[in-house]
Picture 1 (cartoon, rainbow, N blue to C red):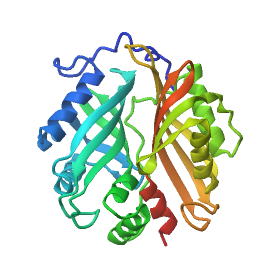
Picture 2: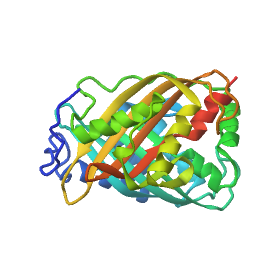
Picture 3: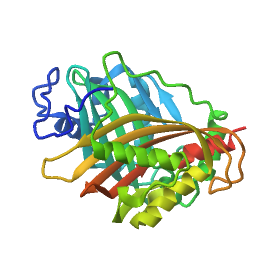
Picture 4: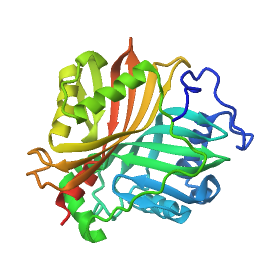
Length: 328
C-alpha cells in the first residue's frame, strides 16, 4: 500500500527515466497508444513494453512481448479499422516505484476478418476496454486488461455463452494460469481518500450480499456495464450489482488498486481494480448453478458529483465468466 501522493493531480509527477518528449503519464500513454494502434506501428511494442511483461486478462495470461505483438496483430486481422479513442486516463504512482495508468478506451471497428470471434460479419462494433498499465523507465512492465467481450459477441449477432464455448473448444478447456505479481519495486496504490474508500466499500458490500446504502450513487447515476448495456438511477445500478453477485457466493473480495484523481478541470474520478473468488451457486443470467469456482476480475471507473457517483463504467468480461461456468 502506498500513500496518496497522487490524490490531487494538479502537479503531475515528473517523468524521470522516460524519453524527454513525454510531458507526463497521460501524454506518454496517449502517444504510444496512437503510434501502435492508430499509426499501425506494431513493432513499437518492442520499444514500449518490457520483455518479459505479464499481461493478464480475465481469461488469459501472457508473459512475453512477442505475445503482445501477436495479440495486436490478431485483433487487427479481424478488426483492421479499429480505433482506440481515449475516454480517460486516471493515474497514480511515481517514477521511482512505477506509475500506473488506468486507461479507459472506446473502440470503433468493423468485423472484417475471420478469427476467434468466428467468420467475418461486416458489422460495425463499439467496445470499451480498461487497461491498467504499470509504467517505468519508458516501458510498460505489467498490465491488467479487461475488454467487454460480451459487447462484441452481441453486436456480431451471437452471445457471450456461444463465444465462451467456442474459446473453450479452441483452447481445450479453461486453463488460465496464475499471473506473476508485478515486478519488484512496484507497490499497488490504495487511496485513503474518503470518497474512494466509500466507493470500494459499496462494491464490496454488494459482493458480500449486504444491503448497500444508495447514498454512494447520485439519483441520476449513469452506469455503463458489460454487454454495452446502460442503466440509469440508483435502483437500476443497485439491481445490476445485486443480480451479478446473486449468481456467485463470494469467498474472497480483494481491492487490488484504488486511485483517486482530483482537479485538472474535471470531476473527481476513481479507478478501482478488484477481484472476487466465488462459487457459482445462484440461478441467474449465467444459467443453473454449477457449484464451480469462479474468478471475477473487474476494473471500474467512476466520476463523482458532491461525493456521489454520477457516472460509472464497469468492465467485467462476461465471456470469461461463461467460460468458467461451462468448463468441464
